[in-house]
Length: 274
Picture 1 (cartoon, rainbow, N blue to C red):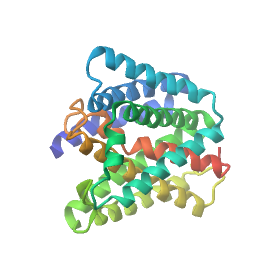
Picture 2: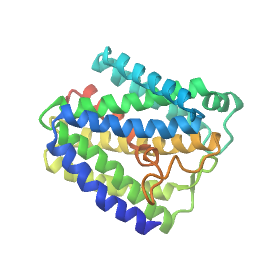
Picture 3: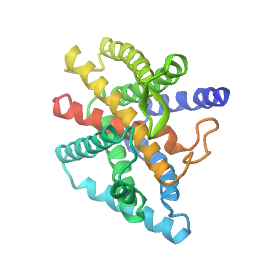
Picture 4: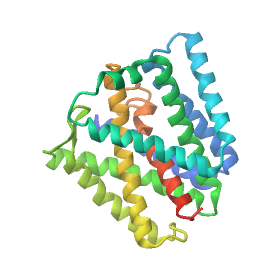
């Protein structure tokens, strides 16, 4: 499994880096849209929209929400991102070690409400990534920065958790995740944050603001991972798919990014850096 994960990463990561740094936003946005659509197909299948008519309907809903969000200002999109992921953070924190109440389980299991929630989260990710990429001259570097931050956090969390993990982070949601893993993610993430700052990718932000935003984005990426785990647990699904050898599906690979990228972009906006 680890060998497959590494081989897949070796192939995909250089392609992603080159695309972010060298493709114009007008092209990159459609590549990102393709990734979102693949993730949406997996997510909608988990919900139960597997038959073709239901899948077409679910994609129409996703496109509708994405188009509607075009009408919103950058301030409103940033505010919605903070509200959505703030709510998820409170939900995960409250029920990390106890069963989710029936009311919330019904919300995640009910097909239409689950469809709206999934579509909103994916649309926010897409808009945030595109907005960040085209915001300033540093946009491509900053988008790459937050993606690498999440990847390194995932790597640091995985190995630190395997080596030292004892204290469960969210036993009722993902028993294998530990606080020691979070510590490992923070250590590796902060090293990368200092590198990013030294490269000038922080724009007008001070070192303190850059590190604080990086820590918040990193921790929210963990919440994104736990949110997908909670969703799959409610629907009794182990992996979102098997498109990527050793990694599961597309959704399994971007679950942390769909949380971190909107929050990172919103943070830059509210801090006046974009």
